Length: 257
Image 1 (cartoon, rainbow, N blue to C red):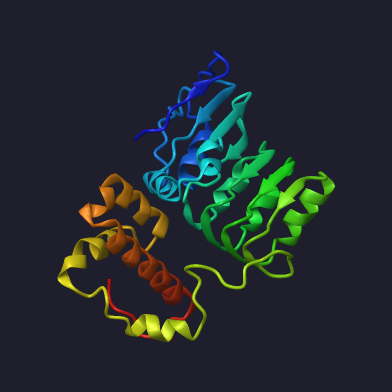
Image 2 (cartoon, one colour):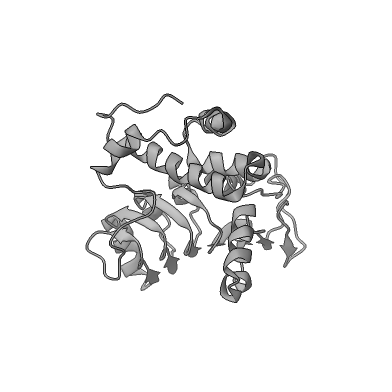
């Protein structure tokens, strides 16, 4: 289902080229089906982002009113993106360093997703940040010192809790899809998903260049490749662990994709 847009202004900037912030946001969140025309962006557009198919399924399963009521949107002001508010979208993979190109960004809310890996240092280029919410993800490593300086200088509101960040309070003891080193040996030996019935999923993972964000986008467009929810989610969890292990512990011999 394509995203929808709510306009808060009618003036549109006509230029020879596309709106660069618009292009950046599309590249940074490939799992979201944006329908913004980057050559024709109203100056003060508030673009309401539809939940991903996976997020809608998770909301129906959990039955929580909190997730359904949270607004998800991209706010433009004077043709520049100033707010990126995408909580509880079931977005996964690393946070894109391309967000550092949003020079007028003041609010970033990616809470309640499945983002993993480190917080990109490029976010420190967003020197107007006033609010950053990254809690309840699977983030690891340290919060970049340069980003902390920006947030401190701006007296920004920050939320980094419920991740796997080092030297931060209120963190998880372990992260989903971030296996321990000794677990990668078992991931390499796992043969549960070697049957021919999973060939379509392995082909999709290879087509996605082992990028879980791109794989999720393909699965949403293909309704999980007609797999049942239980089988698909089991494969996806294993695939995410495999990708992580291949990147961090290449000393093991993994199955060919």
